[in-house]
Image (cartoon, rainbow, N blue to C red; front, side):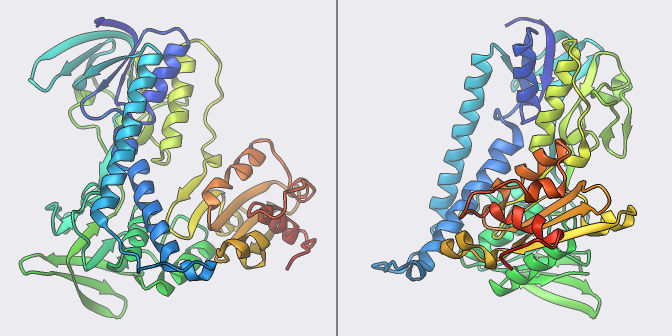
Length: 465
């Protein structure tokens, strides 16, 4: 293995491995430094294994409602959390091995160990045995990602108070669980554990769950959760957790006063924090701001030859964002002329049931920005495909600028909407107007034709509601 490279990427998550492969494709001699499993948190402890668990929960729910589809089961289905976790880990392991294959295929070296910047062109890598080796590279890209954020009053012990990693591999189903935080991680685990029979309570400090979403979407998810048996407490905060007894005693401050909850497990899902400790930022003077590395539009830090992408820089902490940043970064290094990333057109997806997908402004944000709006909404209850699939919950909401027809925002809640949001992303990127969406023939019967119907509703041309 060489000691001198054109590019060394520290971290092999969706930002790191994508940047490394693209760098190699552009003719740069490249290596990736990774101390744990290839693929980072996303493939091993985040995006992929959670989706595997959620699919198991969905199949279990289908089986419980088999008679709705004209199917009689010989016996009542049971949720085997051990088998679900085993399948989830198998999916994650397979994806990690796939990254190993991709790196090898693209002639990217894998350096095992913990990387630390030692200068503008120097990187020290310490392996498991504690041996440190110096590598040189003209360009060092930091892609060290993030981890579960801990609150001082919720110290995680891995058993009674847990983070998302432990939630992925519990060896038995908890009878009850309190989930603190209702972002994507919180509501995805709320859906999963409720589906397999755990009594779930979600505690959210803000007035709405999934608080970054359009208010109509937040209210629809809360209604769906309550219908499925999940207790939702908004405008509430966990004050303390007493873990001394057999059950956790959780004290929650609400608008009406304090409320006490008992549960087997508390899941802290209050966001992520950056992995920037020990990677040499202070040693070489790399600038940071509120725990994130300061970079320009092409992810250069203030130190020549050092770059940063993904969760450790500004912007949403999403896998697809990190990948896009990595590609832009290395294309600029290679002398190409990539366009800076448009952070206003980043889709967000949440994989609870019903799913949530969105891009652009919420209705509230658009109004605050001073736009005169045309807003259209089409419910899946009016969709033939949704009715046939037994998935009538939810809707698609579109927001256009009334003056020019600019597509300002798109917000979806319902079955498989995470597979549909890309239409809005591409259309917005191409500056497609609302009327052009109305006049673009969508296939019938599909869930996606609801996008056309919602656009038609915005222009008072809707047919099916």
